Image 1 (spheres, one colour):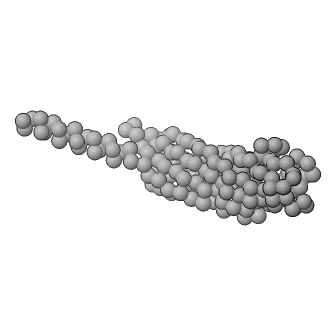
Image 2: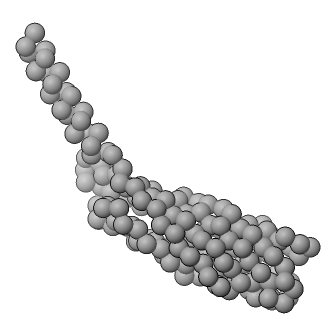
Image 3: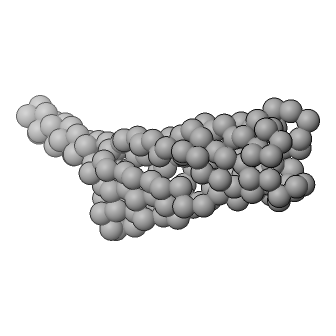
Length: 154
């Protein structure tokens, strides 16, 4: 009976260690979009000014081999205004990104593609935002919007 109890205790300790190792470090971050312009290349070459946020949620776990698994979700919540026509636009989309490496941080430059929906008679656009994201294994994350571009349609 003692052997079985000792064996059970070792299994419990190993299970606890494995669980602690896989418990994710999580955090979130908001990158603010203030008066960032993109150009509507689909019709009149009108500048569209964007405002809102790109919200990032991320988690990182480290496996038994020391590899950090970064999982990042970026979600935008934007409004836009055409500078010539006054057309209003909105974008609310998200995408997921991953990085697996044995470094203590992940440094990614990614594209967040969204439907930039016209709120009037103008056609909707496809918005592509370039994001530079840096996250580390201790819970820190930062992001910058490095570019905004549009394509015709959605």
